[in-house]
Amino acid sequence: MSNLEPAVLLEKDENIAIVTLNRPEILNAFNVEIRDGLYETFLALRDDSTVDGVVVKAEGRGFCAGADLTEFGTESTVIRKRRIRLQHDLWDEIRRFPKPIASAIHGFAVGSGLEMSMLFDFRFASPGTKLALPEGRIGMVPAAGGTQSLPRLVHQGKALEMSLLGEQITAEEGYRLGFISKIIPKDVMIPTTVDYMKNIVQGNPQRAKWIKSLVCHGLDGSLSQGLLREKVVVARSWATR
Image 1 (cartoon, rainbow, N blue to C red):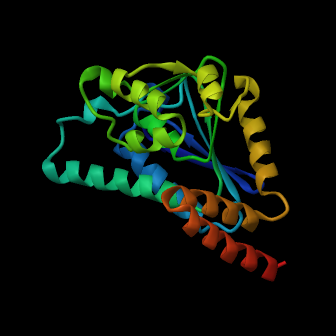
Image 2 (cartoon, rainbow, N blue to C red; image 1 turned 135 degrees about the vertical axis):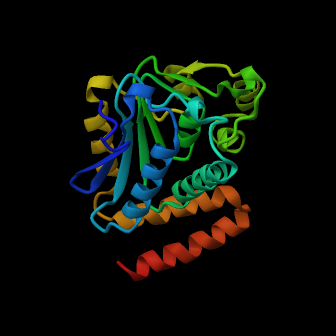
């Protein structure tokens, strides 16, 4: 694979954008190149009126091997600060992204790769896919939002176990925990995921945005705030029918 190829690829299947992590030679390890590519891609897709949903996938043997450790300790302070700022910008952009996002995970999703997938609305995985936050096993703290995202997806004890021990789970266990949405054979994963997303947004893509917004904002606020927001959105939806 030539390094002249983009680290992040973008294609479309009708109204669904397909975003591909394209650094299989480094197992799609999360580096500045991939972060910048994803950030710019999601910014563009936010404003693309022809796109109603997004699928994120990866080339090579696995989804993402986590942070690119070759970057650690090799940059000046200015560049290191830029890395952190861009990472936080990307995470915030994904969190605030109004359209439904699904990840199609195969092989493995480790560290920041798994943490990024936690920000997506749906996580599909091929059989036997390995999922882990290994930082706890090497005396570190998950640094890409895992300590906050994981307990919102699985029960607290399991979130602590995975974060503290760096325990690896399979896609099958992730499905039992409710972390993985569906197990899909690798050879049909992408078309199946794309079709699923088309079904999610069919008929009224704005409805999908409204419902996603209500659910996501509801997790960050009180029940009374969420119900009030729901009333407002329901009234708006009826007014635009």
